[in-house]
Length: 306
Length: 327
View 1 (cartoon, chains in turn brown, yellow):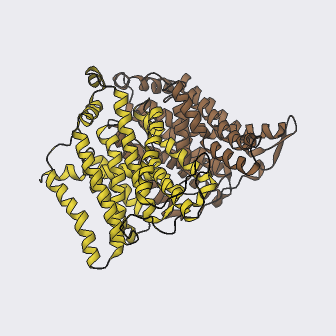
View 2: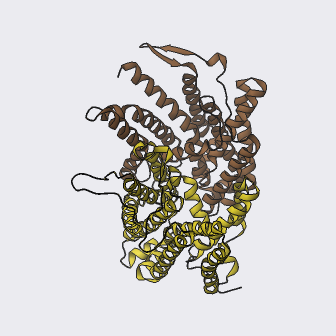
View 3: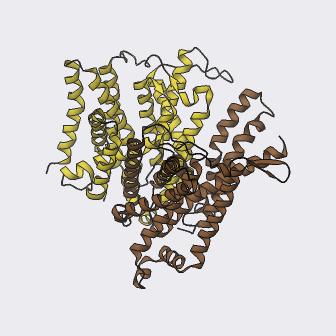
């Protein structure tokens, strides 16, 4: 257990957390502004990854692939919002859950129909391959460092958009009182479409970025979606800041738990049992974290009182 | 327009006569299909108590379904491999006896429901949906990483468990066991929703303030309903594992939790026979469209979307004029 290993694992956890943040930021924004629980957010993540893999293999350009993922997912989000999601804003949560569950089925099977069941691969571009040397003698993959930096830039951009621009003011006002906002002359349905497409674009981007380190396959979105739910339950629904803190916590807990819990148990068990028990408990660690936060603060760390 | 009671009797008739007809015509596959539908119906009847009557949407009932499956799998695995389950402080052996497995399953699922309920019922609405989903996912990952009982590969049970006096490997006899359990659960549920507890639970969905004003403990009502609901769904999981003679982490999958809700919506929320009708139609469609196209989930998606956007009250709401106890 060296310092280098610990530092690498912390960076891995951060990278995972930042990618979760891109997912959960959109999800929490959509819930905060429109009051909609969107299970199909994971499908948009998948669409981004598939578009990126297709464009990358056709053109060979990673930048074009990312642009395709971003714009394609945003477009898909806007279309879905205008045709189906729009009808759900005034419905109860059960209807929202079912309709977006139906969308998952349609998107997943549709993708399987077009691309087949075999996973696609998206390569890390040559200029981002290899490792960088960090202070303290840590060798860390350049691509993962790029993900962390890129994610932080997007997070900063998002928070600037929400706090400093006119559009951000309208979005925040929409969270508080939608009738008042539309009475003041803001086209609320356009605003909703924009927020949904923004969330979709972030999800699609995350899918494309992660697609280069994992395989691109049908059903890749839902495990991430459920983790993003855990994130926003921890952070508090509707809070971007909560999503950032929550995703970092979840990313670190998941990564570090998987490495350190088996080692921890091996202090007082034989190795085989310790690996078994440790990895079983590690697989539950983020949910235990969520339970603790909930018992302590039922509306999450930064959630408003219901 | 027909009366809901008549529709229910018709469904009961289907449950009894389709398998008998299939038995006479020597179509064991149809009987197995019906058994599958009946087991799903039990799971969804359990969920309907929480979702329909209680009004809290659990998106994690696969946690109980899977737990039921694993209770059965673990007990039977120990029995078939002659490995003792617990050696200390008391000696416990595995078992292949269905009634004993059911009792342990019900107790284990009720315990899990109590733990999940105590944490997640602190919240409401969307938080509750996400948290129940997360807990089911936790069970899923726990089962995949627990290599002592098969991990991702699951557990195979070579011979179906025993029920005194019956040959459970015979499809029609196993169907009869499941069907009788469904009828008992339906009878129990019919009595329960008309009992003071059921009426109070129904009222608690409509107005928390009023139910508290007349002196009920809101949380206790919800938690009791959640525990009962989880126990019933858990029992169906043990039956499902017995039907397939196989348990795997996929019994914990979130798709299954979603499908349980779909059964209720197809049939009708808050109706006693809603989940039964929904499960029958679902299994029938799965067989029918699944036989034509590999991508039957696309069709399911569009059907579901149409039901949510345009239909209200599911099949029962469409056919019967009476309002559900719901609304």
